[in-house]
Every structure is written in structure tokens, then in C-alpha cells.
Length: 145
Image 1 (cartoon, rainbow, N blue to C red):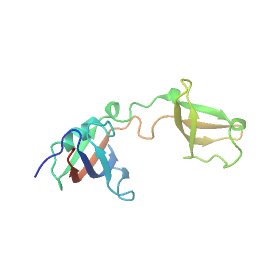
Image 2: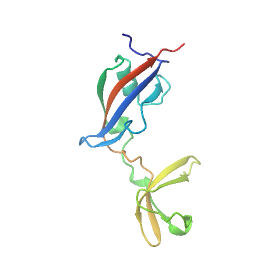
Image 3: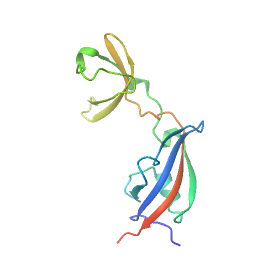
């Protein structure tokens, strides 16, 4: 059996867990994911782990928050006047908003609190500040041409 290397496309299943063991995402509903190694589609620690795996192998990879989704940054939690939001759909906690950052780059905000005059939105990734573990299963390897 071979192991994958840079340029190969691998098919994986994964579950991502917080440090407390709570699963916060997986391929269970979306199905296996294809990743081309070396393309920067996934964390380098996972790419490295995959290069040591054979089809059918399972492995857990722990990634500290500073190497995963970064530390939580309070300056990314902002209040948005409700007058600046479209009337429909009405904002709800957990709702995702797309906005433009000061540098012109698109950012995703998550509504965390809805008030009468303003909405509190968080631009941090939902897993910012969290150490995470990826439970990986290598399903297939397609060797680069």
C-alpha cells in the first residue's frame, strides 16, 4: 500500500472536536471530502498526518488554537445599528452576515445578540480560541499525474 504525497488528491472523512471532546463538525452529512495535498486547502498538520497514512488508516491530529482558527479577538465583536441592516430577514442569534472589512476584504459575521437598536455581531471564527482535534480516516488516494 502506498501513502500520499504532495500533489496527490486524497479523499477523507473527518470529525472535528473541541478540547472538551464535543464534536462540532464532520463529513457525516456532507460526505467524504477531496483534498489536493500541498494546495493549502487544509491545515498543514493534517496534510502532514495524511502523508503517513494508507487507505483505511485512522488518525487523530491535535491542533492548538494559534495554529488552527487563531486566538479570539474582542475587537472583532461589533455593534451594528439595526437601521444599517435590511429589514428582512429579521436578525436572529446565530445568523450569518456578510460584510466588508475596513481593508475591503469580505468578512463573515455571526449575530450573537439582538437588541432593539443594535445587533451584536462577532467576526471571529466560531472556533477561534479553541484547541481542536481532527479524527481523520483516509478513504482514497489519487496519485498526481
